[in-house]
Image (tube, rainbow, N blue to C red; front, side):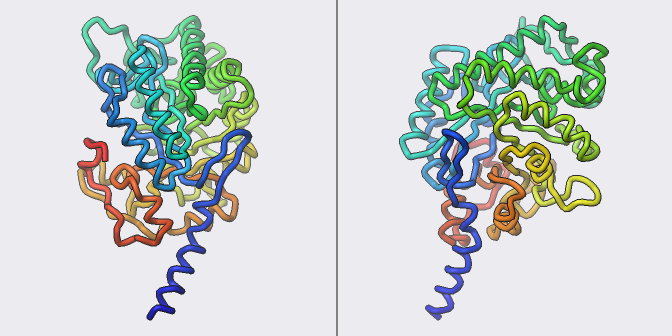
Length: 381
């Protein structure tokens, strides 16, 4: 019996070992390949993250998560924050002090952390805004369903927002973060420029893929100028938009290359390919996932994400309010990582419910895994 148990433990250790190898990219050195995916939490009243937020992130960092990417942090622009009553920003001295404490707590236990910088664009209209709030803005004043919402951005406003992203990147660097992630996915402002449904502009920021990518490229270039050559920039992108899960930025590899290569040239170090299911092929005729294509086309490091550690696509149980069972075997993940399809693995809902998820996977304590339940969204475990 003991020999059998030892063999099982040995096999498990060998199987998951790629997930816990170190990763180095320039000055960024991670203790494992597991990334905590950015997830909106809403526990930062008036933009200020408190001690409980710092403790929340620290608990993951001390349990074998190599990199924390925070919930979205709004850039310093009047219409950036989707939920100013509860979502964080860098806008006040108290907010910056709160984030400094978060960074210090994560670093104290040997972790690394980056903020996800965001401008909500037209998606801001999904939340009630305080009286007197400025109008929401977007490339064409259209939401993900093509409905008129908010105002069309002027070129002057575009330049203002580009600079605001750069200012936020510089603030993140000053606060001691280990890099930044730019939120270019899920129907928020950068993504609104990228997607033809929400970008109907007829100037240099609309039309072709290259033109639709211009705003994102300018954001990356401005951030790179603000933070220098050695501070990592992660760019998160997605095909799907909430709640339009069938949306496509790129219909084939050629279109994806036209989108990602200019971003890589502008200064992106890591692409974060957000999908609903990390294992699914992206284009017909190839088994490669979206993350795999991003790596092949750009040569950059890539993070994969999408229902890691869950038996079902998270959008299914989110929509129904059902709970999700844990997929402790992390089937296929380590093998794909070892084959070089991607470099890092972002884990979302599984880590939301269980701070020790990564450590339990590493130690073969699969019977101790806590399943994700919908109530976890409203708590800071």
